Length: 429
Image 1 (tube, rainbow, N blue to C red):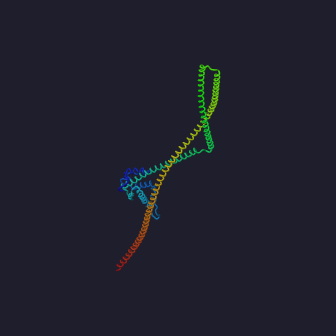
Image 2 (cartoon, one colour):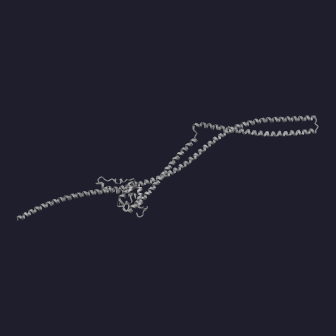
Image 3 (cartoon, one colour):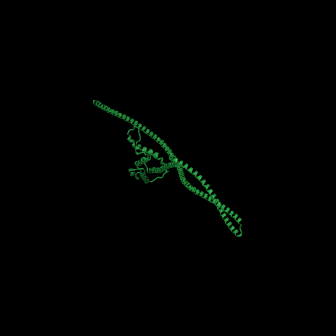
């Protein structure tokens, strides 16, 4: 007790602590500083120790008086007070080892002193502070564990709901599978038809471009022919003014001019026919362009539906990412749960080891108590034997006394008789 590992508190602090933390009701009101200083009261100290044991081990004060004895003991009511004191002494001796107090004795219960009681109560107070802190820490760990379990359950529910939504989005119901197949076949047919129509439109556009080039070439030729005719007419006018024409040459030139005009008219007619054909082709192209626009609208609708399907796929991918993140969180929570379970397992192992040690100590204590009780029984038996011997000796002494009284009476009678006979003899003489 010279070198303590805990602080020694003042008497006021000890009284306030035990009144608020240990004692309850009337006991807390009646427990004052006078019970500890200047001279501690044994009854108050024993009652306080009993309440401390009740707080720590749920060992009620009434249980200290219920220690089993053998049936041959006479007057068991005389043993109630020492049994309670011995019970408190043994249990406090076991408990104070955890408070780093190793020299607890019976004098600390029967005749307590101020310094001893203050140091013992300071050690108990330090241990109770430590116990309260550890209880708060364990409660915090339990609350965190419960919160983690609630989060894990919520995450598992969310993952299950997300999995169900993913299954709903990815799987097509049997009622719509036929429609989906029909839509897929229709989409494939439309794609093939649009490809053919695109090829036809491209061919028609190529033909139109060729026809446009031909028309431009023919227009250039017509303009060139018109220019040539105008130049010929000018040359003819000039030649007519310069040359005196013969009728024969004039006829020959007129015939040539007629032939040239006929050729020009034929060329113009063929050009007109080609223009009519090109116009009809252009009208067909316009009709085909209208059809292409309709197909293009259908393709836009298909593109919008494809965009919607892509959006659904993106949502499904986002749900998959959320599912993977939640799975990672679940794994992390599983790891944390495993760590908590390991820590709980370690604590349970420690508690089991401590329980085994306590059981062993309890068994040793019970064996010690049984030995003490056996010794007490032997002492009681010896005492009974000695009492029986004393009673026999008393009887013998009484018998001897009665014999001595009888002998004294007989002696007194014989002496009286002897005196009478002696007196008579003297008279006769």
